[in-house]
Image 1 (cartoon, helix red, strand yellow):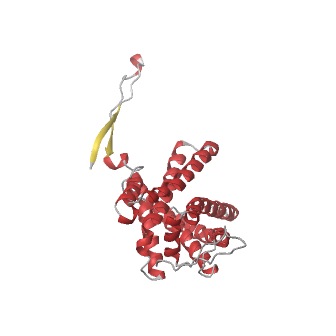
Image 2 (spheres, helix red, strand yellow):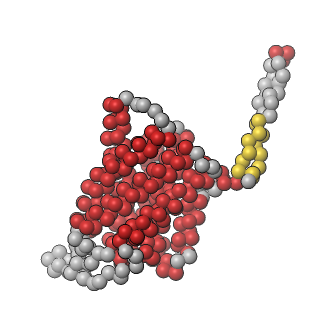
Image 3 (cartoon, one colour):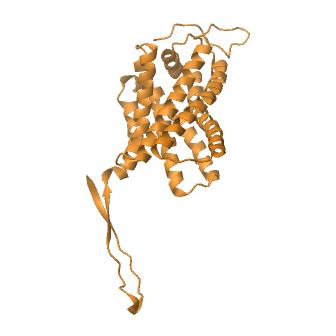
Length: 279
């Protein structure tokens, strides 16, 4: 579907050396090009207003970590010195994943009745679908670049959710925020190296090339670290909200089937009264 036409005409007064006007170049502007940056945000709005459980002022608190990570991203861009194309594409990746994480916090409680593996698949599918909306409208048609974006979102989602799942198991199914975040840091980095390897394999399959072995190893190590750091920093403000506010703490514990620990009178600020999770 065509939204309109952009017509480019070059002209220059070169006297008798040639024509002053070049041939018209027409570019079809599709409607989806105008909404590539808005598609994921529209999903976020729907996730806030459609589910009955989110028709609560406390649900709006989820915007606090979203705004926070966006501020961090803006600061990063000021120092990154990217060209406009790279900045646009990396911002697309960032916004897509940030909104996908936000949507998971908003609707994840609807998956708590399912078994562990099915629940993991539902979380993964939701995040990948939401994150993929941006590239889908950005590229407007399926291409090698779009396939690479989709592969990236799949690996990022699996890395994030696998790290959360492993951290939950190593906490013994108990609500231990500090222990959970330490394990999450470790597993996010370790899983990121596995995901980076998988992504490089997919990237080489889509765009065949033979970079030097030493260069490939350097890319693997550097990209794995950046990959893990990005996901951990992206997750951290949402986790802090989940630990700090009862509205989201209940959802966090329900989704991970965590039991709240009894009060420790010697350290009352670190643990919460015991109650069964709502799963």
